[in-house]
Image (tube, rainbow, N blue to C red; front, side, top):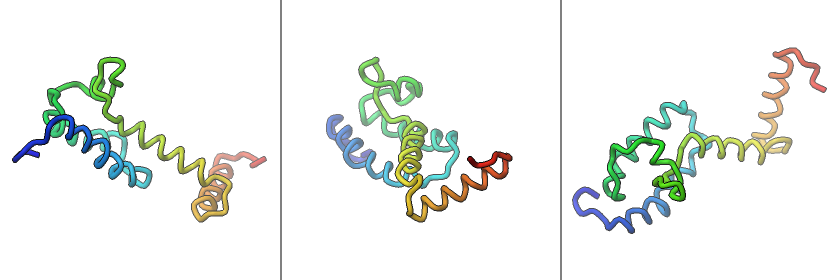
Length: 119
């Protein structure tokens, strides 16, 4: 992008069609802390914002605020990760998959650890 920048419209298209799906694909298996995730993706946004037509020093609140509320509308990665994790939990809870069985065993161990009856 630095040698020959794309037009802003094409940069937005590239971000939403190419980059977001590639980043979302492995998001549920990522074990970074929320601070580390925000720091890493903040640097990605910091480098990409001038090519999208925005000041790179804009605060995080305006970056992630929807455009209906005068924000840019970029993804908030901690919220997206939480959504992916909940989706995986709902998909595999009480199923016969390997992950479903692992979730069941972890839950039973947790219930025994805190001293509940399990009923």
